[in-house]
Amino acid sequence: MATEAQAIAGDWGGGVHPYRVGHRKLGMWLFIMSDSLTFSALLIAYAYVRASNVWPTPFPFSPSIVFSSVMTLVLLSSSLTMVMAVSASSRGQKSAARKWILLTALLGVTFIVLHSLEWRHLYLEGLRPFALPAEWAAKWPGATPLFGATFFGITGLHMFHVFTGCIYLVVVAGRVNKLNHEDVEISGLYWHFVDLVWMFVFPMIYLLSINMSK
Amino acid sequence: MSSHTIDEGAHFAGSNRLFISVWAWLLALTGFEVFLGYKQVPVIYMLVILMGVSIIKAALIVAYFMHLRFERLNLVLTIVPALVICICLMLLVFFPDSFRAKALRSTGPPPAPAESR
Image 1: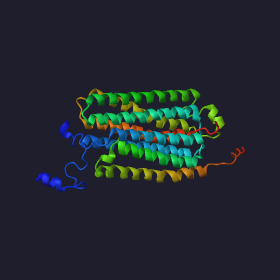
Image 2: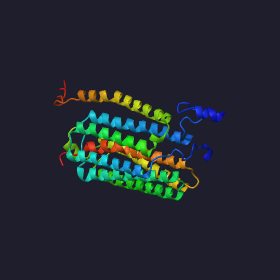
Image 3: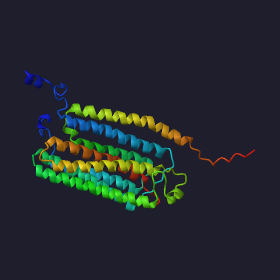
Image 4: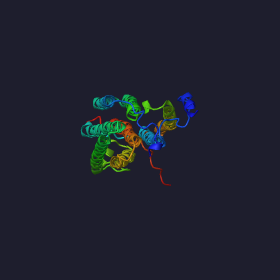
């Protein structure tokens, strides 16, 4: 009887599992939705202050944009290794899945190291959350000091996501034999989301702030 | 643990070749974005093109890497439209005001200080 009812029910029938995903995976999707809105609000707020103020465009193509492009390459590659991990996990190859997950975490750590180097460089140049370097202030008179707040705020929150993602991946890699495929897939969802956010942060923060005079 | 899982691994789709080609497309689109920066395209064109390319890249990641393309339509329609509408509403609320704020900014010389009586 139940089988017959399930057979009749189509995609819109709902039934016991209307989404055909486990509750944890659905929970991760809902978390991703809420986190997407957090980053959207931050990026829209960034666009707001940028459109309504004199905004410095301090990043020379080389080395700043080249450096951030390498960071993007690292993060994109980590997404590929993560999808390989999920693919291996779906075939039941736990050992291969563990290696791909650890490689993903390693690329995540690489991204954090590169980002930290860039932060350090900007800090030494004099950029603070609520103050521009004297050289920038002279070059762009009347420029808002909010550049530092938006830059450190948005990239910092993203870097925090990468950091927590690395810890999450290491835990999943360590317990991969005890976990089922969907657990690996859920960790992949989180990691791809971190990559997705960078696809908006990179052009908005870096590419739209290229110093045209150099 | 497995009792909570629905069709474990059964609906996983997509080959490694597909994922590598998606990754290559993402790299190519990123390269295109960086090229625009190198060529120093005017900011307004840059903004429009970059946002368009970023949305395409996000769609590729969500569809293939996050497997949403292979999920049930129910899940897709629960997630995507709500998110798009919320983001559009935020844009509609914020953006007209940001341009108004710019119009209010004084562009003339600063006013002379009031004389003391």
